[in-house]
Length: 127
Ligand SMILES: [Zn+2]
Image (tube, rainbow, N blue to C red):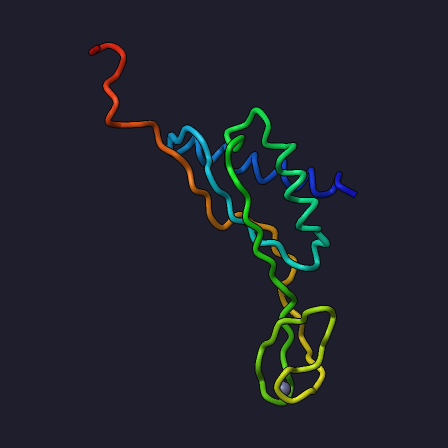
């Protein structure tokens, strides 16, 4: 279902547009977002959705990088936090089942790279 990914792509672009306008950038060249595994977002579909959603926006020529995060469980035996990948809840060090899950539901933009107007160019008036 790309509808889910499309709405995520659109909201990412909204945030980027707002931020880029705030700092006076002309376009966004790269966005990095962090998405938790619990969000059930398909990376490939999100990339596809992003290419659709960016048309006619400040992100038109921008690329999207996706950073996946996982639920972090706590091992009651060695007290270590470890990421739960593929719903594997056993501690990688000692095999004890992890407890106290945190995170994994992130959905945030962590980096926006944008292009500023060319400051070296002479304004039209002075040509
Ligand atoms: Zn352990």
